[in-house]
Amino acid sequence: MTATLPPPPTTRAEAGHTAQAITVRPRRPRRFTPGKVLAWTALIMVLLVTLFPFYWMLRTALSSNSALYLQPGNPLPVEFSWGGFRRVLGLASREEIAEDGGTSGTLNFWLYLRNSIIVSTTITVGQVFFSSMAAYAFARLRWRGRDAVFFLFLTALMVPPIFVQLPNFVLIRDLGLLNTLPGVILPFLFMTPFAVFFMRQFFLGISREVEESAMIDGAGHARIFFRIVVPMSWTPMLTLGLLTFITAWSEYFWPLLVGRGEESRVLTVALGIFRSQTPQTGPDWAGLMAATLIAALPVLILFFIFGKKLINNIGYSGIK
Image: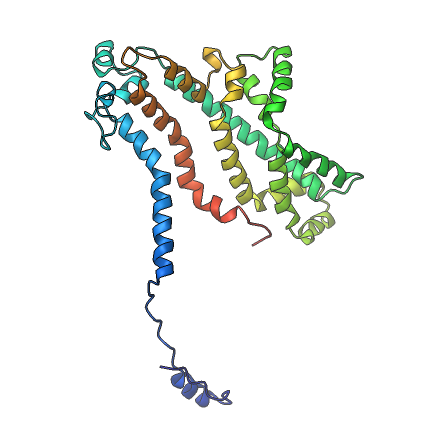
């Protein structure tokens, strides 16, 4: 059926007849072309390849460690057992550990989990707060040399992080903060070039009329930032916070360098130590995979809660 468009109506009666005369072409059912079939096949293959390591971790964690070496290629859990999770959480007795072929080394999981949460949360809050203020200064305040300073600041993105590890280690050592949580947190607390750049791009899209109206009412830059800009910017701040938390949670080398003590050890470092505690039969792969899955849960939960906002707002700018 085709749509019939009569001349523009001049009276209400003609308008009523015109509305009855207009017909809408029904939607055609979608057809799967060879290109679409190929695209969906490639997408499914990429998805399977991406998710397979997570499945293999779960399969290994639910297997008996002593039986893993007998059937290493079995795609299903070998002699299904919760022993790996029980060892990690400190719920297994020595007899159960020996029977399951696990390591007898201890893993103070809850202490290391607490340290990781403290470190990652503090770094996230600090970076989002200080980077947002710095980005507002680069985007809205006018001062001599602003663009040159911003360009110099961005050049830090080209410096490999490993180059600053030694100076940071010497500074933390001289401050007496080795083997402490503040020593792990301080080098990442304030801001990063990427975080400042990310927030600055959003602030540039905010209409200046909003700020000018607030200035007419007598508001200063601090009040404008906290009362107007921050409430309007919670979406990119949430995105930046999620990215920062994931990065801080996964950090390994720096916590290993300055946080070797028991009280300052984070979960990523503890997993490496647990891996080195090898029993007679070989590494405790079931316990290690169980600990890795539990350690990944906070990040997975955050991503499932805020993942849609993260994807929708990576390129977000302006005001709704």
